[in-house]
Length: 414
Image (cartoon, rainbow, N blue to C red; front, side, top):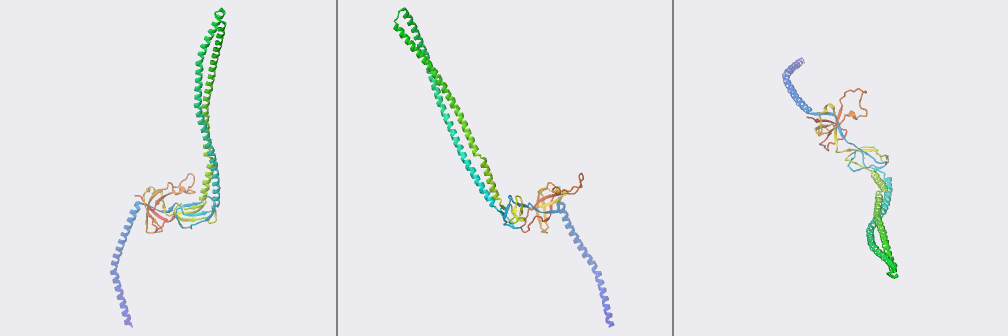
């Protein structure tokens, strides 16, 4: 028993000595291994750090960024009750797809009433136009008649002047004949007193003188009548010319009535009311203006909505972009068109690519309802954020991007 214990103790000592010898021999080996591992780690960290530094040196990054889009608010243009909503929240809809159906019974009645009023106004206008056209035709006929009467009046004036000329031409002969007859009478009276001729020759001279006087009086009377005829013919010419002017004035008046009947304000007003009724009937069907997803839906069937009330929102499925809020100290190096790397928290390890679309003309604080301002006349300098819009050029259907997702945006500024 004691011998066995002694042997066990000796064996333990031998094993302890062997362990110490092994530890002493393995210690340099471990140091070498740890040294190699440390060198490899240092090289890896140096390579990673160098890449990170090289990347960070030419990129301006921010974590204050998110997926964004121009959300479309679906509103009603009229006040009416909702009959049906054929879409559900989160449902994909296409442009032109029916979203909301409003009760259209009142709108259909108003449309029928407006149509009847328009047709009545149009019929009244048509009657007035036809009457005005008849007046224009009658006035033009009057102008034609007046124009046709002018040549007749001119011809009558020419004839009267010819008659006057003829009458004037007869007067000298009648005067010469009367002068001869008067001279013959005087000579006959002288000869009768001396007894050289018989009484019968005096009577004959008296008769000739009386006939010549009558002829002269008649010639002069004809001249007066011819002159009166010329004056009357001239008056008829003037009257005919005045008739043309009057008839033309009648045409102008008739044309004015025709234009007034053609541009009836009642027809215009009725047409406007009809167009408005048609639009209101169309407004009872509300369609999606874009391709996208139905977001927040506040409308319910049976609800009476008012004009301008928000019924739901549609989130676009294509026009997605990144809104990155850069510090004002970094935005100076950012320009439109620069390339950008986009890292979405929802898809770690994947890099989206895009480019700068635009830079907001003001900081976020400018758009705040209550901008930060300590007191009048005091200003504390605080680094502001400028929103930068970045496009996403390589959309992946397997990695849908939804507005509000957190992202990190790095713009290549060099």
